[in-house]
Length: 410
Ligand code: FEO
Image (cartoon, rainbow, N blue to C red; front, side, top):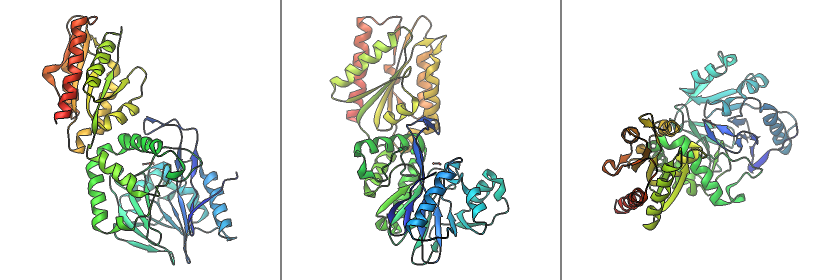
């Protein structure tokens, strides 16, 4: 195939793969992604930083060939492989690379070594060099400093700082699932890039929020952050104004939310839906932003993206067989995975339901949300018989107002 490398700095090329067709990754919905990797030409050695998902090696190889051609080099030789993360969207071509360059030196974190050998049994006897924070590697006129970044987002994750140009190869951190011909943030609509970065953070990074804060501080204290002029993640576009995404990560990781409430609901015969709409009216009446997530239509990865920067949620589904309508189970399960309370400040929550006779959904929704780290306004739960009458709709409106007031006063 024909595919071109993109020069991003002197002797540095993007040689990644464009996955136009993926619509699901890590369990959440997207519209394509990229597997970014970078080739760095030193005076003595050439290094490849990360690689691509299984199946994309021909594309990676075509771009590598083009990068060598752009550098005016006839012989393709890669001396160093820096593997910042073992997950197969970034290590899937490692066996192909080693097959082409059997003597290639592999650098990765200590914990990545057994992980890589587990993923790629053909490499079980291949020597791998462990790297820790502060270690450096010289390619001749170009050097790297390594910064281990455990749980951002796997235990083996690592950042590689290219010292001379201040490029931070951050692997998954600071990524966005975008697939496009553009390689830089400024080539796309800034708000659109922020929104995909937010979805990425919500679904991948939320659980590690405290580690985002401590890693940024650690890098600032060590003087690394001052050197960073560009952040080149393994998904999406390159941040040419790194402070933009660093500030956004700081905001999302500390639950620095706007006055916004996400109403999440499902319905059987439109009763719970009517309550949800009235709750929204009450929220709006207080001047608070509202986002509506209808579980019958909206994917949970989009729901949690809205929840990420909301101060509160209202969650309501019908009662069915003394329990919540089962469609809500997926989002509850996902809340438990992500642990929004990890960001240090609990989000408030209100619950509501329409029931036929015995009820039961409210108690279960309350306990499930409390277990997931939400601060539930228990005494204000709305449990309505059958179709909500005018009085019930008024109660729903008041519930929305009360929740909105609670976040404004917080
Ligand atoms: Fe953790 Fe992009 O893989």
